[in-house]
Length: 496
Image (cartoon, rainbow, N blue to C red; front, side):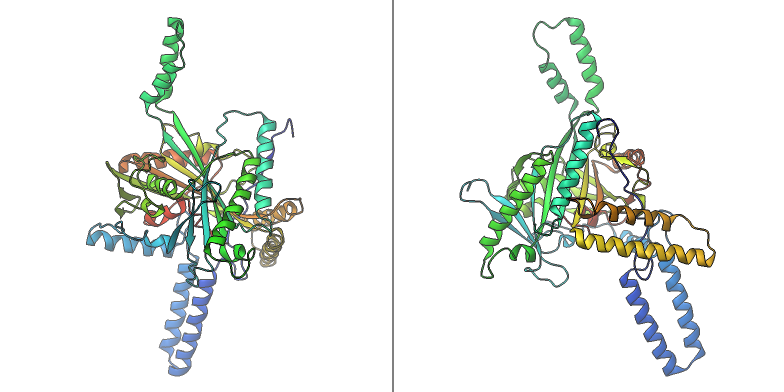
């Protein structure tokens, strides 16, 4: 613990695991319906043409499902997106969202709530009530709340401190995944902003006391000049997702909205305490105006995170006209337009080699020159019992696939072995006290005032991701306007 670096193995989730292999439930359902319709037509017509057409259609569908792009994504989905983009470009690029009474369509139906305890009526907490998309029910939806934390920008740390930080974060996730706490997701985002060179020079000049030798003053001035272009500011925020059905279980059946908000406030207090004990003390719980200002800033970086002018509620965060593009989405800021790109780390791109607890610092602090970006890490929390069952099923599928390859005499690609190793590690980890399961995700949101700068930023971020051991990034081509949702403090974007 004191001398050796504590390491973690993150990779191994190289593919989808299910009873039907890589096929999703939707694809299986579509294939079953196609088979039934084809058999009915074949029995009705008893035609050779129907037989041949059905076989050709099945072969084409199988080809479309199995084929992948060079980046490993769905070839059929990429083809559809490209065709849609060409149609939109012919019709002329138009805004897909104009500010109004509702947020963009991908956000769905939300209600902005506010709750302030009697002890601090002047400091309300913002709660966003998300309607459940499956059954369109407010009762089965969830609440999200956001608070600012002190990030871990501590520079170089001794090995013992890094190991302790990683262990504390393990315990944080394990504790939150406990079945007794109505929290199903935790998001932590770090917003990185360049500091203006003149501001940095003024700060450095203020550090020089009167009477400093001229040689030292010149040296400090030169140092400030070298560092000014690469100086960055870091702000960190955490968002908690609270499912309403589990929250309601803690209250009487007759409890109203006020009681639910009060209980959510107590749950958030528990989470804030746990996050603080993990080494990230609270700075402030965001109220409706501050949360709206943060969302507005992510779309328009010219507006400061703490600038509350013109913000009356959370919904005022979506106050920009938005125009989608192929490699970016454009938002009309207050002073100039901004271009944004969003990337995710795919399942098969996580580092396969052991990494330390600070393996993502390449994305947070290792990009030069300074680049406007948000690094968002998300954890969908899974209690220990269901996490163990899922890992057991995953290991069963992986073992069966490997036995099948051996029986057929196929040379292994290493995918099955890597997946088996991953599921075994999960099972072993779940034997440790205060450890639960998680579905992790990493999102990257870049912003620049013109497309050329955004392209250069993407190159720098891709290089930093490779330094962190990430084999590739999935840039949401044609869908950056939709992917912006995953970069907002709303705890969205993960399917458990």
